[in-house]
Length: 601
Ligand code: GTP
Ligand code: MG
Image 1: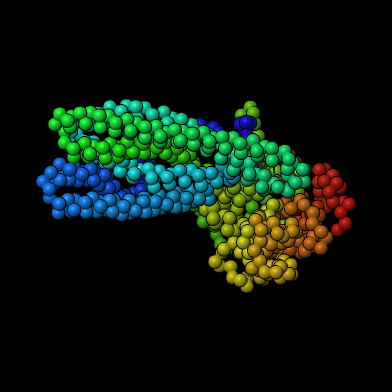
Image 2 (image 1 turned 90 degrees about the vertical axis):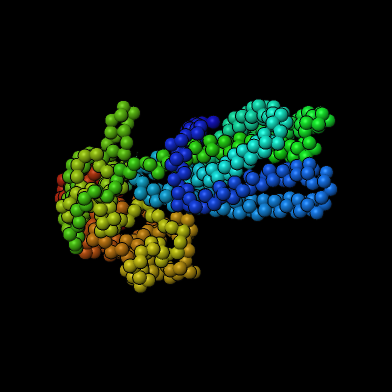
């Protein structure tokens, strides 16, 4: 298996033993529900006690009541026996409901916390972490913790109480017979230990392989079109069969262990019973043990090994919960680089929209030698209030990166970026992003209706404003042609609209938010000439009356610009007006020649 594809593997290898620090932190999540936990433990205490009540009633019946011929008391004992069983039933019911509820509450809290963190994390984090892995965090790791809380932490008390009561009852009734039962204990413990080890590895395999199947499915489903286009169905099906087979085998292995473990424990129980009957029978004949004690012991022995079996299963649960919680906490504790400054400077309203880059250096990461892999080198430029600034350059020159820095999606390594003369890292993030409207190169629409995609749930944008924005942009005609109009649900990522239509919707979105500064990353993909004309009109509509910074791919936008900066491999090499740059005869003139000269205007 190629490790690169299965990034989960290393993570799973983190599989941990018990870690008190992690456990303490996990228990914090129970704190809001501490009274429910206390109630659950109380219920378990009573339920565990009931485990010895039956055998004890048997003892009384056989040794005291029957020999004395007290039939009415015998009926009462039988009734008490049934009552204890019925009470046990209700307690089990209450405890199951309570602990499941606890587990679900904790999961809810955890999911809320993780999602909150995901929203605050830097975009840089998302460049490195595939969707599949993050989904695993929120679903399967949280689910493991659910098991820990709903059938682990609390239920462990039940097993311990039960063991304690049974042990005490046995020792109290007859310590010699108790020792006979305990004689098989080392074998049971050894079996449980082996089972635990084997199962732990099997579980880890299962999880690794499940993650791999998920990652594979996620990618192949999203890329189904490419798969079909290049006739990769056969090849992909083969690969899927392989990892599916692996997954199946891991499951089958774990099933074998289960299939062995429970019968083996049964076997030991039977051996313990045989020993009790044999030795107990002998001592009964010698007159040192009563029939009642023997009968009670037979019942107690049958109940003795179950909690041990449970505890060994819980230990597995505990281990996977440790690994899951470690991964979840790693995510929760992850440091966020881009945060609000501790003492933010307020912007003076209304925002004038002056943007300045001062000697900005930026790299997404380091190269093999550990040096910064510069994408922007010493970039300085200025957009005056109300000006239309165009940025042009070859693909990969760093144009989109400039925008990402302006929006503070990333932090430049050197230099400063100013909005109205204030360094943007001294502004509150929401304030900065509120005043700058951004239309991205790759439009992202949500699988909700059109109106929602324009308004994005903003309370202060009315239905009317949504329509007005769509009309001014020129998106209204096509939206009204949709079967559902503004309420038409779009496919995932807006897949049911054409590329040009998606762009118009995103333009309407920017206009509806009415920002002082507009940043537009023009799409490189070409659209038909009718939509092209609409987009041109929409662009003008958007830029009217505000400072705008446009990464221009269309000649019309460039011609409409007041000032043009030319970017080449991360460096700003020329700037001026269209006419000045053409006369200069440098890179811009060449770009113009290549890209635009032949395009009809
Ligand atoms: P076009 O949109 O094609 O016209 O290019 P652009 O000028 O917008 O280029 P962009 O700013 O997107 O990228 C500049 C350089 O940074 C390119 O060499 C990219 O490969 C690189 N780059 C862009 N995004 C990332 C990123 O998230 N991580 C890393 N490591 N590199 C990136
Ligand atoms: Mg770009």
